[in-house]
Structure formats: structure tokens, C-alpha cells
Length: 271
Image (spheres, rainbow, N blue to C red):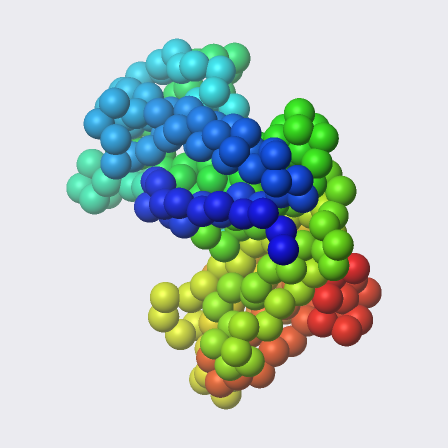
């Protein structure tokens, strides 16, 4: 049995697994401290989060910490990679005059440690921050503790270091029809799932329910899964065009995968 522990924080369920019992406490403390540090920078539910200073600046450049700078940079990268489907922008209704063009993520500027966001724009980088943090802290913990580490933050699962016997067995998020199907994720990859809160896509398919992507970069896995979900029936085509290992589950129970997914897991496991 792989040693593990879990808790809830930042509105998410967090789980840590390791290949060595002696490393579990240290790994969990490392993950908890890292998430707390990121929360202090960008958790919108915290009144003292640094990101509020950016959102209150409203068109005025403002200097921020290296941590928040990197988190915003990562969010803007995800936006560029998905052509804005995964955007850090939240527009405040009524603030932007109707005669002005609607601000886009490309209007946000980073110059060293100075951030400029146009008037009427609020930044929400929660999703990309969690994905990037899970990916990063799994690698740091595995390197420092010299063991295998898996970090799960809700539907983002990051792995690093050597695998346990039998590999990292991870349940497929949002798979309601097969009773808990699992895949084996090899260390060094991150699996991210995006789930629909309402039916999307063609009624003939029942709508897209869940998109799962496995990639070497955790931020990209999250961004790609989220962007594909927004495309509805075009999700599988977009994932295939981007050569992603991905699985699309539909509300009526059908499941389709990309060739890259089949190459990784010909028997349902990511090898």
C-alpha cells in the first residue's frame, strides 16, 4: 500500500502519496506550505491576498512580488496557448464603457515585477495557480526527499520521482459509468480533468461531460483539458490536432480517446 494523506484547503481536496513511509510527513508539510504561500498571493477569498492590489489598481501599473509575477505570467501563458479559452480575466459588469473595446488577456502587461491590467479588469488565476503549483511541488518534493511523490489537487494529479510498485494508480475524474476506472500514470507526467457543469456539445452525444489530458507539464495539462471542454463536440479534434494524450467522456456514457492516449495506454493504463 502506498503511504498517503489528504486534507482540504483553498476549496480543494489535496492528497499526497509517497513511495517511502518516512517521507510522508515531510512531503505533506512541503505541499501544505507551498499551497499556503501561493494562496497568500492569489486566493481571491482571502482579504489579505496580494492579487487584490492588482485588481484594485484599475488601470494603474503596480509592483508585485516575484511569486505573484510568476503566477500571472503562467496564467497569461495558458491564455496564449489556448487562444484565450483559459483566461485570467474577469470583467466587472458596467465598469468598461460600451463605447470601448472589451479588454482581452493580451491587454495585461508584465514588465519585470510591474503588472498593468486595464480598467474594468479583475484577475482570477486560481485554476492555473493550483495546476502549476501541484506540478512544481511534486517535483521539488521528489528531488528533496529522494522518493516518488504524487500530489493531487482536486482533478489535477502531478507525479515525480520513481514509481511505486504497480505505478501511480489514479482514478479518472468524472467517470460515472464504469465504477471508478483507473489509469496508471508514470512519474514525470501530470493528469488533469475538466468537468462540465452543464451539458455541452451535440445532443446526439449527450454533451461532453469530462475531458482528461496527460502531459509532462501540469499547467498545460490543465489548460488543454479546460480549453477542450469549452469546445464541446470539437474537443476531440482540437486535442488530436495538438497531439495530446486525452480522453473525452460524454454524458450518455460513450468515451473517445486520441491516438496519443492509446499509444500511452493501449490497455486503459498510461504506461
